[in-house]
Amino acid sequence: MEVRAIDQQSPFTTKDGSTIRSILDLSNAPVIKQSLAEATIPRGGETERHWHKDSEEFYFILAGSGSMEIDGEKQDVGVGDAILIPAGAWHQITAKDDLRFLCCCAPPYRHEDTYFE
Image 1 (cartoon, rainbow, N blue to C red):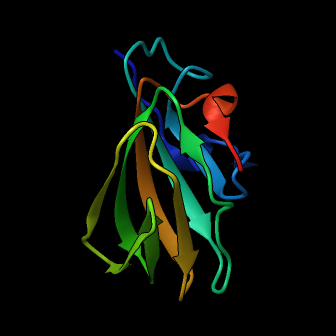
Image 2 (cartoon, rainbow, N blue to C red):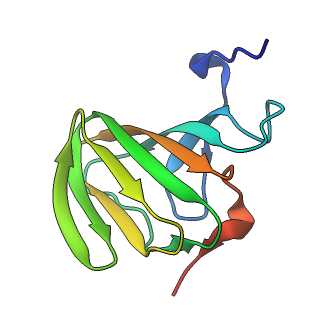
Image 3 (spheres, rainbow, N blue to C red):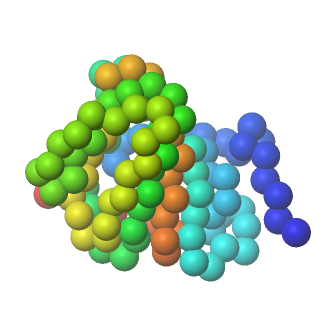
């Protein structure tokens, strides 16, 4: 059985500039097809616009609010919103308030699968 407590995971900064704590991923569990992390972005912050060749992502907003952009389409997002980011889609999230969300990737998140303009 694999159980990981979020408060025991060390935060790090991803290539897109968000701070995450891996809950279950390739670095801490025998994960094969997906990963789960908590991401935080301070008020006024944003990720660098990017895309993933392999990974499809879900974001689930836990706290705060922001603006999500996917392939040029923008929408305000807040607590309780789930966002689908298809593989290959350019995307960026901007925090209007301190933003905290879950990020699920399939296949699991890898720095090498993050691409910029």
